[in-house]
Amino acid sequence: MYLPAAISFCATLAAAVMAYGVHPAWVEQAPPAWGLSVIMLSRRLQWPMIATSLILCLALLGLVISGKRRAWWLIGLAPVLALFGHRFLTDPTNRYAVADEPAFVCAADAPFVRDEDHVVGVVFNERAYAYPYAVLHRSPVVMQSDREHRMLLMWSPRANAATALSVAREVKARELDIVSEPADGLLVYNARSGEFVAAVTGATPKGDKPAGVEGRLAVAKLTWKQWKARQPETRVMLPVDGKYAGPTGPLPPRDPAAPRVALVGGALVGGAKPLAVLEREVTPAPINALAGDVPVLLFRDPAGRVAAFDRRIEPDLSPKFRTNTERKRSMSAAFIDADTNTGWTIEGVAVDAERPMRGRKLAAVPVQENVYWQPVRFWFGDLPLHAPPAAAGTAHARR
Image 1: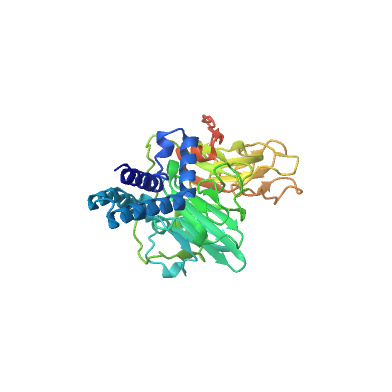
Image 2 (image 1 turned 90 degrees about the horizontal axis):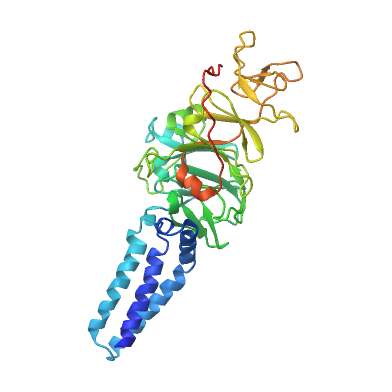
């Protein structure tokens, strides 16, 4: 009696680890770091647990067939079957898929995307691509190639965060597995390297650079109308299953009171972390801050989008900027830097300056807007949150 009971219990336990060990609730029910470790360990043990459970089920079946135990002991296989069904049929992560070399069409051949639909825009190998939210909600991990170049795009719907990485040829889509969605950020497993990659950061959970990752590409999240106006020659990803269905805009955060942030900089994977700035605090008035070790100028442009530029005019010169309120200065100068007294446009071009400075252009810094703070705080850990005080009486930046 004890033998079949022990076999049933061990088979069910192994199946339970396989089915629920990667559930995102682990990071909520336990200390976050410990919960994430449980998820990663469970994924590493997934196939050993499957094999163990199946072997034990066959052992129980053999006892019944041989006549050593009665057939009603097979009832012990029902929980195992239910757990396998949950893991491979009803688990929430099963709704996600990895898109390998998806098809694209030009903007004119994408009437299914409406102007108000949101897209993730990426310029990859000097070509513009648009990934509609409705498509990414079904295929949040995309692997694509362009001649000798290769890109991995990861999208976390619940965090409203996208990460695009340039990767080496040895990174294969068939070896990537979407494990879970802890803390509202996708966790991807690379079977070749045995590493986990956090979609929100593009790095491993420890913050290291994953194997095969060569760099980060800038991403933009905006409406299809805005991206198409910015990149008329863009190509649009087609749904992998041919169905353009699903949310076409950002999902609401789990906590409506949680702030939304803009992530500034962080161009190097596994290197300096980006700067998180509260969206509500970014105004047309200039903000002088540090994104990692890069001094940045941050402001909201007339179109309402957050823009950022590297403040380093020279390697050893990083002036601070203020709003141009001087009537005698050029009307096209939105900001004036304190060191050279140069006037700069919202495009980062020096227009009101002495001849050596005139025409100089500040380097743009990547910005990802409207990212939910809670997932960002979990995955980046000690990410600095810059909340500049409201500048009372500061005039809006002019064009």
